[in-house]
Image (cartoon, rainbow, N blue to C red; front, side):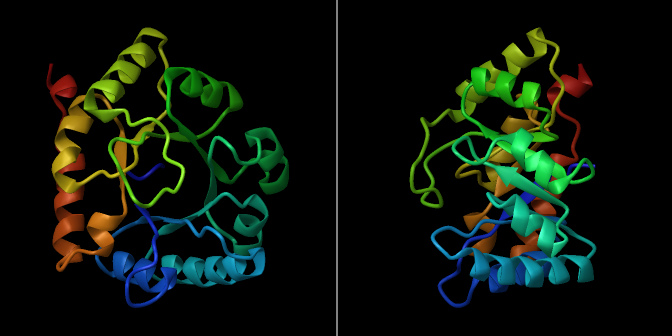
Length: 215
């Protein structure tokens, strides 16, 4: 089961990715993506092993960004692949059939590609500007995501779509009403004064029936 709220790790002002992950888990997050850039594989593996221990302690699932081999060695629940990363087919050969594989998309053409590749979920965005990603794809905004969801419905595609890139808790309701399955939040949780309140509010919004479900 794909969780509707994905927390993507980032290094806080005070501490490491593990600090941020521990705080997100304590706040109630159940799906954590370890996203470490510009570090050696050995360092990322150490992070992943410790992050997986933390997730297991909190009944949560760990997804490792970019590195199928590290996800496998760390015992993670899954791996997430960007458009410029290893192919899904190659990653599947590494991690096997049981591990979750997510993929990034920025256009409907990418969605079609990801569906054909057999991903379990798609992170679609960026929704708006974010400092988390160095090389930002064209910003989609709400209307761009609505258009992609409309094309998906016309093509009878049902893969879970997670809105990514600068998503704030107040964006959740319009994104769910647009047809998205869930959202990924990073900075709004990492930098929150009351992370538990942010996470609780986010889950509440994600689990409220959308306009589409009520029609």
